Image (cartoon, rainbow, N blue to C red):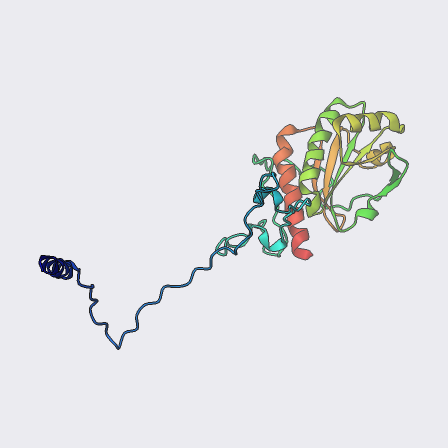
Length: 263
């Protein structure tokens, strides 16, 4: 009898201590429950065979490699382009005739007394001579150009000072229509060519000009003429006069400007 009560008491105690199941709050039937996205896992692979006694293969070492190096070639569209608002590139100044304007003068000191020696307003005398290389050169072949005609000789020390200055003018204005012809009284080309090589002259040279120089009846050497595109002498400079360099360049520039307007 006592055993019966003991068992009954034990069963009652066990029933009283049993925890109640947890309850969840009712879900809203209008809102579907969130579903966690499926994350694909790595494919199942066979476990390494440890029974063969060999260590498992390294997956990185087993991965195939491409032995051929890749080369990236830049396309034309990869080139750096100027900004859109950079504006047009600067251009050389132009004259009113639309041609490129003359560069600034080398000499700015102008002596109005220069350039008025005998010969101004007359036609330049025609000639046909030879260059040191044996080629023909004439005044007629340069018609339509502004010509600085210079008479000199290798025996004339002032001439050797003046001619490189004229060569500098020629390099500055030749693309605008200036031609410099230096006629030497020398008949042999060796000394003339030697001087021209030493001074790196670009000026056109002629030989055997003594008779032509005599025709101009000049008692001074060197002497030079600025001749316009029609063959008229516009500036006459007899003798070596460094103080007249500015006026001679001005005479050249004036004729070049007239040439640009007429062209």
